[in-house]
Image 1 (cartoon, rainbow, N blue to C red):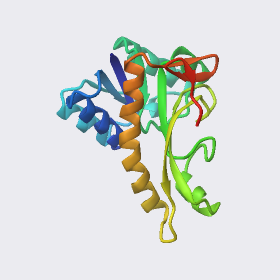
Image 2: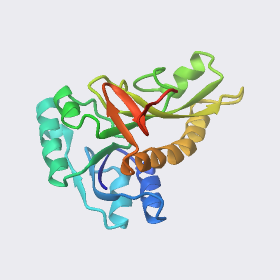
Image 3: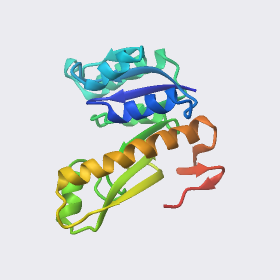
Image 4: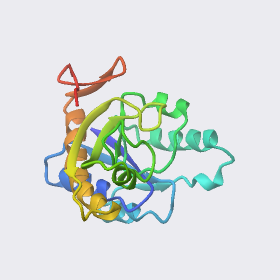
Length: 205
């Protein structure tokens, strides 16, 4: 299954997908890695594995709509069956998200619907939560608001700060994202009627 991965940073989740693909456990071809930042470390990771890379620099566009239109054009050139957001730090327009509805996934470092947006681990600490985690969800026009597919949880202990929680959560991210992409590639995961379905059953988290 052809996949395009969008990144803005180091690309550790991209690496997890590459590793799973190369190990033979993930039946995908990463057709391209696209970043909105030329300095994104994930571009180097992709190049090491001979995966095509492209940069669509958001600062070169007058508005969000113009950027999204160009990004969509670049993505569609690679004809992906799935678009994977792996630390892609842009808020996407409804026209863009609707174009890929049901075939775009995102990973978010909180137990959604808690803590949409940024600084999720610090917000969990400030709220006195005893656990944090990560969620994979389908992307819709609502920021971090699409149907939830899977979650992984980690405990918050007394000595934790935002950085130690982030490190624990990242370990889980690298397991959960390839697992969800695999479900989609196998035809077992879909989005219908605003719900995520696995093997035809609505996901309950």
